[in-house]
Amino acid sequence: MGDAMAQMRRLAILKALDAASNGSMSDMYLQAALEQLGQAVPLHVLGRDLNWLEDIDLLSTSDMAAGMRLVVLRREGAEVAQGKAYIDGIAKAQRPG
Image: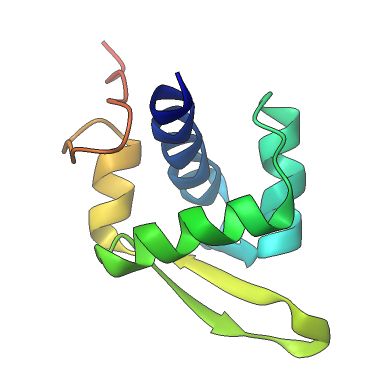
């Protein structure tokens, strides 16, 4: 069950970034966006997911002031969010029909 939840949360992260006007937001705004999508998690869990997604080049992060991180969606991450690509470990997005 935990693995399925992590897969759905990772997809929610990519979808939230894909919906952002410039494909980026701070980790704290991303945490709030996930909560609105029913995927509320503590910041340390979000951080683990961000590290995992960064390790497979779907997004990038950089340190900001006050201990926050800027999260930027990469093209490959957008393709997963939009259902154009699938990666093991992330729930499969439904493509609009």
